[in-house]
Amino acid sequence: MSFSKHASTDKSIVIKHHPIDRGRVDYSKFIADLSQELNIANRVKVVHEYIESIEILTDALNRAKAYQPQLENFANKMVEQIAAINTP
Image (tube, rainbow, N blue to C red; front, side, top):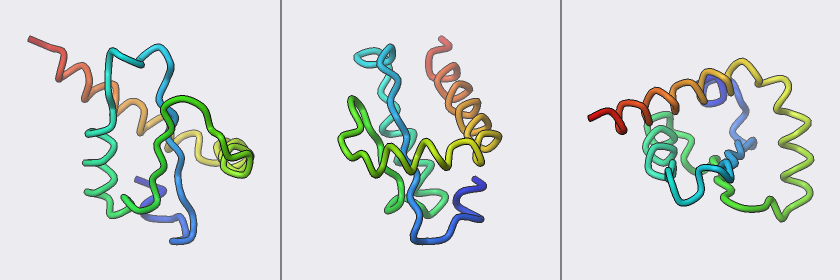
């Protein structure tokens, strides 16, 4: 949420799909819905396998540290959503 409120509109966020979840959990709909809700859908990049662009990778790694608390909150929200989906 911090990204949607505070990042300048020329910035994007990259979300990397964890390899262990490949074939088990597809976060695409959750990410699309949340990014739409936050009005940042056009600035969200989802990577499933490899980040082929060295510029995206370098920028993401350099900026991630500053956004660590926000990223942790986002990840926790994803975990809660998945747990709710997988609870009978």
